[in-house]
Amino acid sequence: MRRSLLALIRRDLRLATRIGGGFSLGLVFYLALVAILPFAVGPDLNLLSRIGPAILWIGALLATLIGLDRLFQADEEDGSLDLLRMSGLPLETIVAAKGLAHWLTSGLPLTLAAPLFGLMLGMEPVALAGTALSLLPGTLALTFTGAIGAALTASLRRGGMLLSILVVPLMVPTLIFGVATAEAARGGTVSFTTPFLALVALALAAIVAGSIASAAALRARS
Amino acid sequence: MRLIVSDLACERGGRLLFSRLSFRLEAGGAVALTGANGAGKTSLLSLIAGLIRPHQGEIRLEDGEGVWAEPPEEAHLVGHRDGLKSQLLVRENLEFWQAMLGSLHPPGLPPRAALARLGLAHIEATPGAYLSAGQRRRIALARLLVVPRPLWLLDEPTAALDAASRQVLAELMGEHLAQGGLIVAATHEPIGVAATEIRIGA
Image: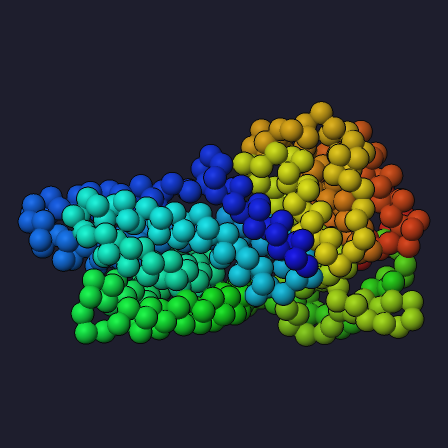
């Protein structure tokens, strides 16, 4: 069973990094969003550094949404999903493995790029570290929450918009605790660990609930 | 191993495709499903593969000792959608399916040998995007060899195949049946092995 899941993760990583895989799509979108925002807000460095964590978090949320629609759709279109369902492995673990592979090629790069993009907003080192640290469990929670929408819209041609409408409300708690964690890193009345632990709990809950719900959605599809 | 289908009814999109379908398939037996387009041949294969739920009735796979097995885990499905990734090399595609489908079964032929058997040794390092329909179908058939599973569900297996490949397919099916395997094939033409004909819809 472990060999099968590793093979699945390896295949999805390979597909994401090859031509047409969409590995860099979210990252480029993230960069574009962070780069144009100062033009809209104005060159006030104090203001930018103050709203920096919120910008980085909203950017990460939207960039996560971009690649999600292909999470199950590609496998649904070419029949791979049917074959995966016949593998004898629980569909929940297959979904979890696919979600993890997706996070490794979308959420993790976003997290690693966040401190770099934060420099463009004039953020301080502590705030940069806090935001990056909060994005690590945060993007994991966003990916697995979004997987539910991806599973529900797997057989729709242009399901991206429906997916966003379905999952954005579910992503709100992650966003609130994520930005709170990043803010707490800069100092304040709340200690860093309090919202951070809540965020980690959200991520763990999303992995479990997202896998189960996505599997149920994929089963109900036909 | 025997396949028992009893009193099966299938509904798709609010329309009853067939009902009261019953048949038994003993080890080494093959069934050829015939019927008009849209009669429910592919739906029956999906039902046996566990991908859709029956409206009524049941499908069982029994061992020699009466032990029941889950049909989806013991079956191979080769249909119109071949599960071939165009970004991956042919060999990578096959290696993946061997690892993915083989968790409950002993490994079969190595991917290279399976490709050679279907006359595809020369394209093992070609990306899936550059293959013809017939080549894609033959790679899907190679999946049958890399993981041994007793029940083969074939949806128009001869579609897009040339005469030589049909010959190879007939040989493979013959060997599978001789080893006690089962075949359920939806088809419009003779598949090359002795098979009981079951007409779907009427």
